[in-house]
Image 1 (cartoon, rainbow, N blue to C red):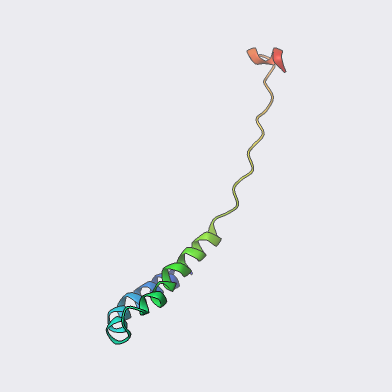
Image 2 (image 1 turned 180 degrees about the horizontal axis):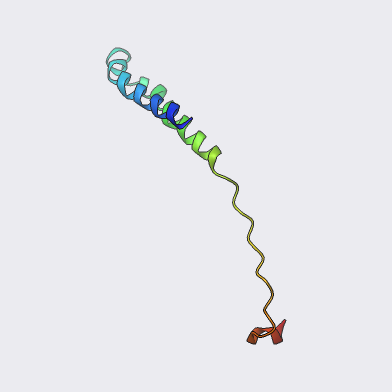
Length: 68
């Protein structure tokens, strides 16, 4: 999938100059969809944050064991 996104960026970069010449600067809104799609893809690849691990109770030999 990442290769497809890189090719999409390459394609957009190659056609952008001619598109801007022909259609004007309004084409930038369409070209902005390429990095937006990449950002959406990257956001979906991030896993959920891990649950905080429970710390084990103090061992019998530690000074804090008297308080637990």
